[in-house]
Length: 309
Image (cartoon, rainbow, N blue to C red; front, side, top):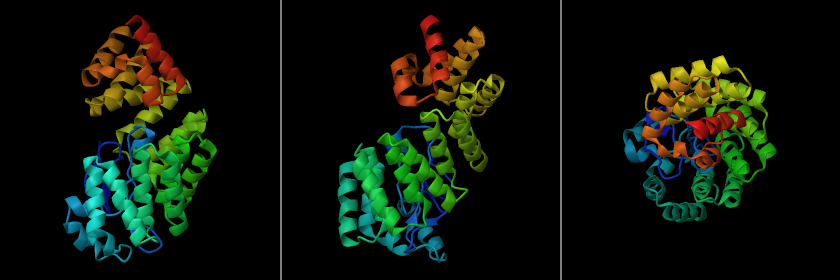
């Protein structure tokens, strides 16, 4: 996974269920606290939730000096020892401690959209989806101009099976920042869940255009292309991914399914071997269905491969 960043600076890597990504712009709430969206390459719902505020202060102390020159950044969050402690707990995977500390921060400063959004992110990782939704709603009320709380709440709505509301929140995030590529990515995910594949493709293409360095966005684009029976385009995209990212197990597995569906059995087996060397669970169709949320045509192609290979 890529590293979570704040304002173009490298920061801590969020693990154990908190999503991560790179090269993000500062996104501020109404009181100029920083909300930072973390992106993913196609992981589960809990891991797509966003950890916000200056996590970078832990790994990159020089960020505080850089932040001080920006009128959009409030250093209080950077310098707050409890905020830093809460972020460290989240980074280390101690989610219960992180939730407790963010709750204390909310009690101390109930107008902090960052604290509400952070606690919601932790609660997503704890599978407390309704509680997370409530936290993100509070963050939206406090920071209605910021895209991040909408993006977070969309993930909570998706986890709750409230897909139309998830789509609306993704669109609200995009309205606030049309270059918010995580919002486009999540919009693609939700549209794919409800079988709006043309809309999903448009969203994934936009996410890939805005963030060409995130391989998972192009993977999702390829999977939807296959679902739409645009096989040559899907195969070409996947072949490019495995060349550029040879350790990307999911891309190898998806390419194996695509190649098998076209009768290229030897090449399919080679790609599947590359996938399972890195992640043996690709041999488990139930895991593929449950964990990866691939479109049905790709799952069927993988099922056909596993039934014979």
